[in-house]
Amino acid sequence: MTNPYQTPAANMKGYPEGENNSGGGKGTVPPPGVAGWGWGPFLWNWIWAIGNKTWIGLLCLIPYVGFVVSIYLGIKGRELAWQNKRWDSVEHFNRVQRKWTIWWLIIFVGIAGIGILAAIAIPQYAEYARRAHGG
Image (cartoon, rainbow, N blue to C red; front, side):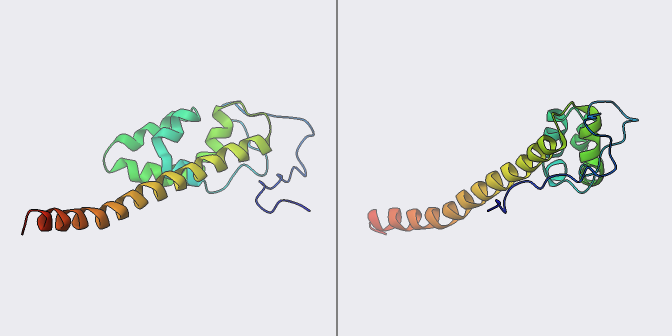
C-alpha cells in the first residue's frame, strides 16, 4: 500500500538520466517537477530566501515592494531555489519545499490557537479577579 501523504515522485520523462543541474545558476533549466506555485516561498518569503540562497527574496523586507516580491516568489521561487542551491535530487527538493509549507501551517495554527485561548482566558480572569475583590 502506498502512502497517500508521501511527496509524489517527479516526472523525469524526457530529462537526461542521472543529470542533476541544481545550483547551476540563473541559466539552469529546472527539470520537470520543480516549477510551479510554492507556498513556502510565498508565506515565508525573506526567511525562505535566506534558507534557499535566493537573495532577491530579501526585497520582501521593503514596505509595499514586499507583497509584490512575495507573489513573485510564490510563482518563481521553486525554480529560483533549484537554480541557486545544490539539491540531492528532485524528490529531496520537493520534500524540503513541502516542509517549509508544513512548518508555516504549524506555527500559524499554534499562534492562532494561543490568540484564541488568550481571548477567552483574559476576560474570564478579569471577571474572576473582580469577583474575588468583592466587586
